[in-house]
Amino acid sequence: MTNETPPFERLQTVYKTDPQFQIEGHSYQTQYVDTYFLRLAQLKPIVEAAGRERWDDMEINEETVRRVDRVLDVRQGELCWVAGTVYMDMPLKPNVLEDISKDNFISLPPLRQKYRDFEKDQIMLEDESGRLRLVGNMIMRQGLVTGCIIAVMGTETASGEFEVVDIILPELPPQPERPMPKTKPEKKRYIALASGLNITGNLHESMETHLMVEYLLGETGSTEDQSKSSSISRLILAGNSLAELSAQAADESAPTGASGASSRAKSKKYGYDAVTYNSKPTATLDTLLADLCTSISVTLMPGENDPANVSLPQQKMHPTMFPSAKYYTGSTFIQSTNPILCEIEGVTFLGTSGQTIDDIFKYVDGDDRLEMMEKTLRWRHIAPTAPDTLWCYPFQDIDQFIIDACPHVYFVGNQPEFGTRLVQGTNDQVIRLITIPKFAETGELVLVDLDSLECELISFKTTSTTAS
Image 1 (cartoon, helix red, strand yellow):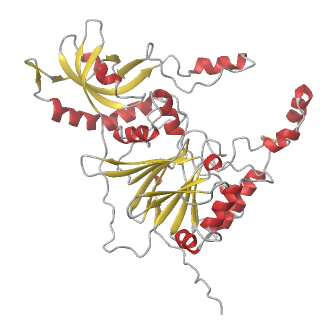
Image 2 (cartoon, one colour):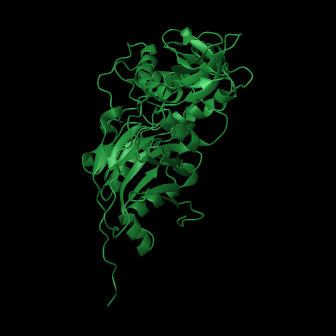
């Protein structure tokens, strides 16, 4: 008589989606300047309250620090503090005129990895009254980006610049209490995070992708692997599930040269190119999602390369793209926005598909993406560089990217490598930061323990399929 392993039962968790990043019937007729005014109106009271607490009645060299309402009210030689919006005047940043001029060049100049030029960059503080240039070692060390709301204390110099002595950020917002189990759970509860599957639909699709699907379904590995897989209640795919060049296979066989371009133009019907359009990537992703949804809950976020609106917040991908997976909608298949805000068993998750941190990376000196994530929390804004260098909707009533409540888990997809860090606030906030690598390049899946917020990394690289 053979000993058969009893079947494992999939762990179930309660999932709630926050509609913060959903947009209903939004119009592009609103001016983008309103977005900055809305942001300043929402965050200025926070930094001003902190400024009053720190600087009111403060004396430096027998001079009392005073508050001024507007940046243009600053007077030379007077010690004062003021709040406003940061604007980075950077000659290397892209601009509209430069985008138009690209049409006049046959070959485009290479894209810049960084906008920084320490000799030419200027840091400005602006409000509805005007701008004021900020100088000094204190402000240069902050690694600020356009769109941050801050308060600065100092004095105006003879050259009309504001010498910063101290600075205040909005800092971490309040955090809802995370439910803690009264007794030690019998088994761990995991949420899986992956990004950058980059599915092409080719015949020889990534072996790592198939290994990951089999692992999550409990169809591979040892008994211990299957037991751990059953403890994963949800998979969150954080963008770029489809390859950037989804029509690559069709393009390889398409004619080239002037005659080829002409033939492609003639084949264009109903808004897409009938020759170069390739439906295989979407069909492959649909099949993969349908297989996963038979056993595990899946949340699908759009990314930069996915067929969704370019402007943030990206809305859900259309359900007709997934004819098989859509039948699980409302049960085990959830299509989400990018960014995403959700709650799983009382644990709040906030995440993006990577565009926000990729854009901040171009502003600051250094490569520490976890530090950039922490700064966005302390700025209380998930996408401060929008709309300056990051496309977004022109908000009219409220800036949806403002972080009103501190999440318990904050993740960013499609990053160069896996990284994690705990951030602690002055009011007992504890946030787990996670950078999710591109799965197509690393074959790595991140597991988050809902009870301890600890992370595990599982590698599906064909050269080494053991967990790490």
